[in-house]
Image (tube, rainbow, N blue to C red):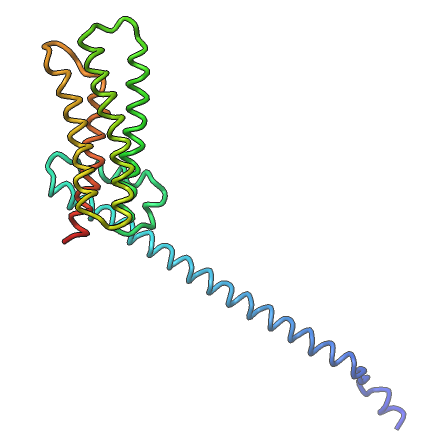
Length: 212
């Protein structure tokens, strides 16, 4: 009898068995948490990736339509301009229109400041100075016009916004044409005027899409 007792495995205390089971439960719970966490991250990854791909496609589709509707608008310029804004990568069509208007405002404001710097040159000939002064006034008015256009666009007053944005395009053309009135004069604002023409053209095309 004593030999049997000596060979028998010792029975662990009850509290030790309880701790073993409890540790296993903790391990199981932690494994399940890790599993669900991995699934959640995977879901978020695919959701965000799909959303970014959709937004990317929307920019390209929108710019393709814009360039088809307006032969003066470059598809590459449209895509490059919109994609340069981080928020465009998760924007819908209406938000892309707001981005285009904001880009126009930024360009117009920058061009006004640039013209002001050019006017500080005391060696400007009278004709160049007159052209720059005209452009300065045109761009000053364009800033006010775009502020109202943005308000009208947000309020979905698309016809008013269309008219206001169109006038900004006309301002850039008027500015550039002024330098052509005298032979041999080269406009220092050609690139900026071109940008001021194309950026609102994007906004106008988007407005037409929203209205159709």
